[in-house]
Length: 129
Image (cartoon, rainbow, N blue to C red; front, side):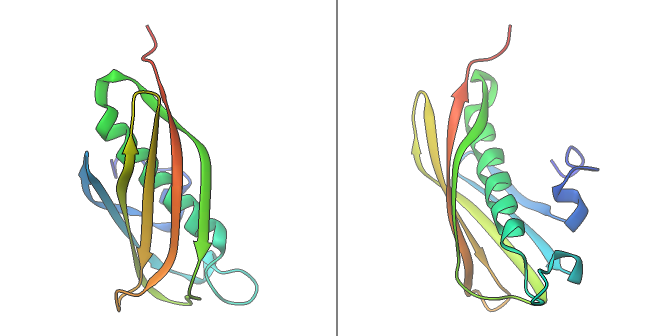
C-alpha cells in the first residue's frame, strides 16, 4: 500500500501504513510545520485525510474482490493540539454490511493520548465488469 500511495496526497506528508488486515489498519507519520495551520498546530484537514484514508483502505481490504468502496461521510473530532512528534492512526470496524460499512479511526500521539477521532461511512460498490 505504501508503494501504491507514492505521489498521492497522503504521501506528501509521509503517511506510512504499518499494519493492514480486514479487521484493523494502522499507519503513522511525523508531524512537520508543513502540516500546521497558521496557529502552529496540525491542521484539522490532515486528521480528516488520515481518517478517511485509513477507513477506506480498511474497508477495501475487507471487501476484497467483491467490489470497491467510496467514502460517503466523514465525521472527525479534534481533541488535542499537536505541534510535533509522531502520530499513529488505527482503523477498526463498527459495522460491515452488504451495502455499507462504518469504521472508527483513532489518532494518538507518542504518549498514547487520543488527539483526534473520527468515523467514516463507506458505500460498497459492485465490481466493474
